[in-house]
Image (cartoon, rainbow, N blue to C red; front, side):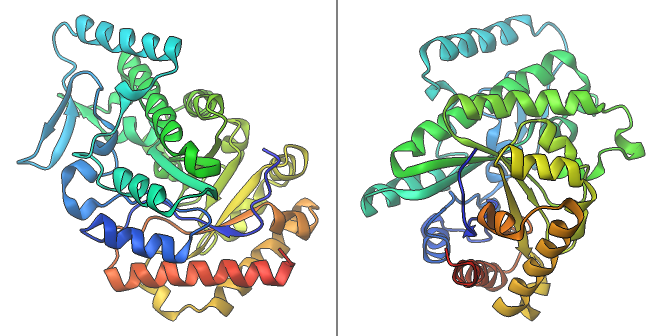
Length: 355
């Protein structure tokens, strides 16, 4: 990576606002150096986490009345898969991923951010986009028999490649507005990795699925991050080749230091970054201040420095500051407080470390 974010603030994705322009006012007012396009789940099913990225995937069934989505893997679907792979190969050959576009019907935030950045002119240090990760997508969405589509070898490959194409399309769209584009692969389900629920999900498979999407992000010259809002085996993400490991530093901040060798390799040898989710995305934000969030970062950075033998200056230089998760489920007032404190905490840390 060898890009030093120096405590710049960015965010995860979702906001509770029903209006993209109001959400962008919050984003650009609080995190102008690394803005995101807002996911707006209050607008309906098509802005939900997995559904938002389902366009163009074969055999998707969206049931608006029951507010759910599944794959129909019954019968002969060979022609549907063949059509998908023809589009995939054509995109790989031409470099044009517009066939994997996320339309305004599935995202009000993407065209709104693009229009706003065009109007503002110039470039920003970072622009961040995001996709639901292949593990979270495929272990959450089921087939017609209510079996996770992850366990269908043909469809999991389609999902990985479909999400990879959507990453590349987003990166191409926002490249003109940024010195660096960051694409986060959101994998909340990794917090359950190793549990009895997902005992059949193998470590090598996780690394391979994630790695394919990471490679697609790298192919566009962008930075690949993975967000997990719970505790997980953080070494998985390092081994998958991500540039940015984003973790909940509010509730699980000490867990990153449980993998000292991997994190030292990630930060020192590979010159990659950690994205510290110091701002809680719950009503707890009402009791926090800039001072308390800075103090939390300092404690967690000290702990990592001591456990992994990493100079604290390197930790700060290669840090982004984020919320612990998306804010889409919060009250609007609480979400806006998250963003306000996020921007102010970033500024305080920059001042403290002389960035």
